[in-house]
Length: 199
Image (cartoon, rainbow, N blue to C red; front, side, top):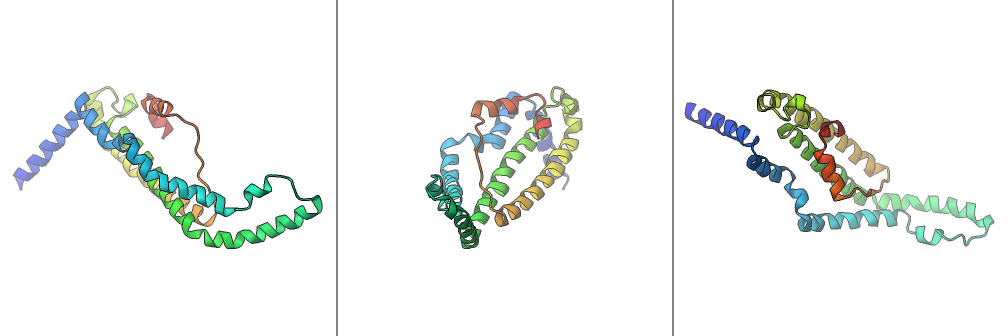
């Protein structure tokens, strides 16, 4: 039993020391963020969900393309709006499974992968000097605090938030939109000294 405990402690110490070197950080960084850098695999995995998201958008109001032009006389516009609102009800019911799949993917999978990546970065490569960004002994001393703060506290709150938004997005129609943050801008944000303030 003592031999096993000694091995475990030794492995933990070696791991902690390795994370303070460039090689160790490179290996750990690959484990934490490697999935984001495998472009081909990531695009293949995300493409079906992107298409499902667009399908939800168009099926929620399939008459959208025809309503962009102002073709109806004014006296028909109000009755047409009422008719289309009523018509949305069967579409809402029929799209329930699709909304659920999209909500699970975007809220539980994507949101958690990105947030937990940030939390793991803050645990092993803290951005705040108070938490050991440039001092090994402070880094080691604050490690349990960072685990509690980022993984246990922030991680638990992120999971709860994801479940809540999954339920909301399933019942209240929502469509995922994409903003134009470039890959370079994203990398710059992760390198920001006060990165933890953005989490």
